[in-house]
Length: 367
Image 1 (cartoon, rainbow, N blue to C red):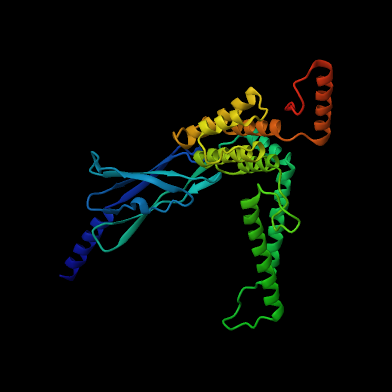
Image 2 (tube, helix red, strand yellow):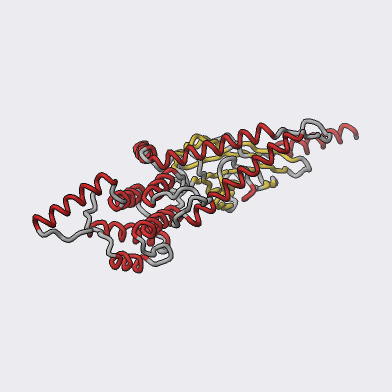
């Protein structure tokens, strides 16, 4: 009887062990640009009687985000093996070589024991949307602007302030109350006051940058509109908005930079108005705009409106081109330097006496 029991247990365990399952994974494509969708398939082949725990949207795929997934219907092959696949649509917004980690899927074979299937990892190469030449243009554009360099200095000052704060603050190393010396609290109070003053000064400047400041004004020295516009255009180019395909935000910021410049340089309302109203105000302003400069503004604002409101996906060559158009407009309409202004005024007075001229006070916009 004992021998018979052993034989039955051996037969049953052999039947359980005879049941098997296998896994394979595929990814297509394996080289993408930022934001592209990868089709990642997990295929399980298993004997009847095996229960597979499909992970669904809860799968852990490392650096990659799951945008959608589909669990296919089981397919029974001629040899009785059941084949079923789950398809994940995944993406990432970080460049470099990233690995889809080994996929592990649990299954049971008619017992309380849980087994795991583990697939091989897959390496995915993620490239930037911008070419090396595009990045070279962005760096050259940013480095050519002195106001942008000033922004870097201010950022450096903030980092130095953070280093000072880190020097004063220390991690708790023991479970006990630490008595801080008086100089710690004095130093911390000084840092807090400096931070509060920086934040208040920045907010105050943002609110009153179009107003003149007196000798006792707490606002920072007023930055000329053309310098502020060029610095903001450089910062926009250096952002990751295009790389992340956040086109609406990119073109909205560009439109705001141009409208802000028009308000503070030309003196006509633009920020809260439609493109048609802005163009009408420019026509009626009397500011000496040439026809091609007028069309530059119209082209920039209309393109931005199409992306913001009509949900247009802009062509790749628009992104740098439209910023260069805005920079061109700012450079050609910024105030003349004193030496050039005096030379232009002298030429006009000479023109008035010799050729009749166009009258005093009319200045040519120098490209």
